[in-house]
Image (cartoon, rainbow, N blue to C red; front, side):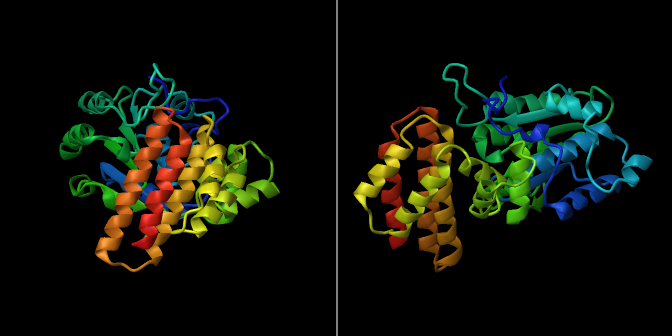
Length: 345
């Protein structure tokens, strides 16, 4: 299967990332749980997109695979989940060659060259046989689901079978951008670990590291300050003309519920190409605006439900535009029409 990373020009995948910026408290919680010998079989790692959830999950996976006995002195004396870059577990996880690690994520559709819109159910079913067999190296078997939102109902049902009857020395790491929307049947079988957005300085340092920069440039700092604590969002803002697109987006969003057709035409032209980063930057700004409406407006149930419906609808439209390479200008007008309705709610 093809991995979720589809271009060599993209920043390193979390499986290749050895440095974790921020989240020291969460890392210590995982470390203490493991070396105490009573680590839960499933963790739900939640928080906003691009803040390092997958990086932390892979960091724990490498540590457990490299140190299968939590009573060993190396584990008891460890101050972090870091594993040396030359360790066999590090190299094999990065190369997707570790037999005791299963990763469930969207893969590339070989017919279209683009990512599937969801994690396929046959991938999830692999986890049943994966956990049903003995660990290839006599240690732990670890599965990472990144993210759980990409599972359809059939995938969720297959995952529940593993969660309900977890085998010994099995560890499931479920990643989610919206822990509150995860089904109670899943949440009740996991230990929840919520990560907070990163400080702008941590975002800047992480973005510089991902881009191979030796220091934080002014452009990286500007993107970090506009990222709302998300390294992923900062990296998308640094792609192409995404920072300029964000400036135009903020102006158009600031006029809501009024719509300026000429400004929307300009936005449509800016994301009209096939570059994934421009569409991602557009959707990031939309989701940030909706998030602010949820947090700062009146907490009236009907209003919140309306905004949640808009969030679901516009994100579905964004995924379909990417998957099927649809014309972006109608997407802009459709999304802003729904945002205007949400602004009036």
